[in-house]
Image 1 (cartoon, chains in turn brown, blue):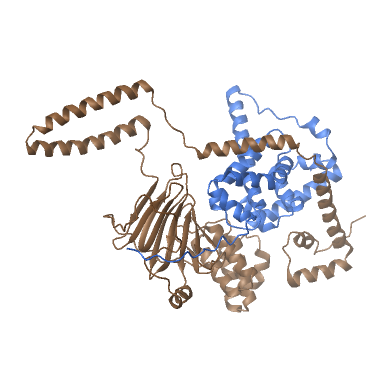
Image 2 (cartoon, rainbow over the protein chains, first blue to last red):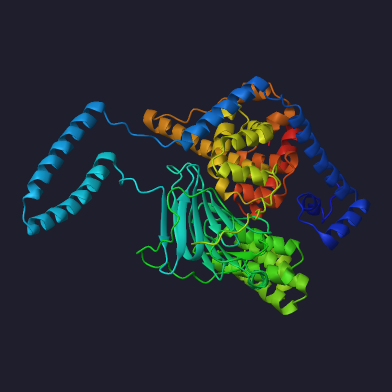
Amino acid sequence: MKSVTCARLFEAEAMRDGRLAGDELASFARHATGCPACRREVQALEELADVLCARAAGDAPADELHGLRERTRLLAAFDATLVSPVRRTPRWRWVWGAAGAAMAMAAATVWLMGAPDHVKDDAKDDAKDDAKDDAKDYAKDYGKKAPSPAVVVQAGAATVWTKSSDGARDRIVLERGDLWIRVDHSRQKAGLVVALPDGELEDAGTTFTVSVADGQTARIGVQEGSVILRLAGRPAVAIGGGQTWRATPSARAAAALDPLPRGAPAIPGPPATVSAHAERTPHEPIRPPAPAALTRRAPAPATGVVSAAAEADPAVDFRAAVAALDGGADREAAAAFTRFLVEHAQDPRAEDAAYLRVVAFQRCGAADETRRAARMYLQRFPRGFRRTEIEPLAR
Amino acid sequence: MKDERPVRPLPMRADPPGSDAALMARLAGGETGALGELYDRYHQSIRRFVARATFDGEDVDDLVHATFLAAAGSAARYDGRACCRPWLMGIAVQHLRRRRQARGRFFAALAALGGMRRPAVDVGPALAARSDVERALGLISEPKRIALLMAEVEEMTCPEIAEALQVPIGTVWTRLHAARRELRRALQDGEP
């Protein structure tokens, strides 16, 4: 005897996987109530899920003591990653090296005291060469460059900033201009806080640039790691590697209505112990910020926009576009999917983006754009997963 | 000389103190205690998921350990979503995949050295001792099994699974369809 089947049977699984929505979902739900085959299929899928969940519920919970041991092992391993390995030099080598260096320095001092000027200049040049040679020797001996400072700061020509430390953490106060900062957390255990006229920036293992103009934060670009931006009266924003935050015009206007006093940090910190004077570095000026490639919807900070810098993150872009679609901003979603397809053409989600772009245009009621987007989908993905759904829309 | 002005309190983080996002921010700052809290919240569910997905239970502890350690290393890149369980599962799946590939290479090297065929793991006795469902699950491929467990047991949506596995959503649907078909056939006929 042949079993009764139905052409819409596949929709039972589509419904379970969340592929049906709106009218399609309602239509199939109505159909399933009157179709024995589809009803049976829906029930079978539910039973299968119940069987799997029942099996999972029967799993024995892990032994509590074992869990505690594993926890301790994990935390110890994590602590070990925070401590950079220290290369030990044998004591006898250190003693002989120190004695040799002291003798050489004494001899050089005695010789230089009686030497003519041109000989002294030569000696200075030699000292520079020796420093370079030392760096090379260090690299040769240890297979790496001589250690650089844990916090490296480069400032633009007109930048006014100060750096201080309370022993627990470093603190940079940026009054105006641009700073490029790199924090090496393998040696800088404490965090670094950049005090801005209108808030603060906390680093989390980072290379980043920060710009202040007209008494407020104008731009933050993160090349590596991430930073957390906290502006007064506004929610914190996490800015990840490859992202750029910019103040929105509305934030600037708001700041203009309620200007902050110039020349003082927003967050009073502990007394400075290292230095507290304005510094101007001879380094080359910071490059002007690159134009933002796109503006994201989510996760949108209250005061600015996070935009892609040199390398846009396709995962973030895709999620932002999907969030726009979910939020009913169909026109924005269509534009975001279009940008995604241009900027991340080779991404595995490109097909999904092309499909969702069609959906977004369709929801806007833009018939011509829907047709064009559908044709583009079929052209790019002739064997695409949603081919059968898209084909009618391309006509 | 700079002007002195009164202390203006700064707003704290927008994330609630106990939220996953706040926890990940602390972890990104190198706070060991935050990793302990993360482990306390999710180690049981991650452990259960890994144990079901691997199906041999041998190195579940090492995989869970590697998952949390990798999460700590990537905490600075956490995207701030409210619950980090799907994110942790994505990391666990990456480790599962690496383990499978490493095993494949190991057996290939053994075979090349000895000029012998790959020593097939005899799962027969272990499977015989298990229930029909476990046996049927053990006979479908790991990628399909993982997708099915994520969807039906962990109750993750298809977009979440696609993001965790870093595959297109169409692939997730295909894997789910194939996994259900094979599982149903195995439960009915005794083989996939």
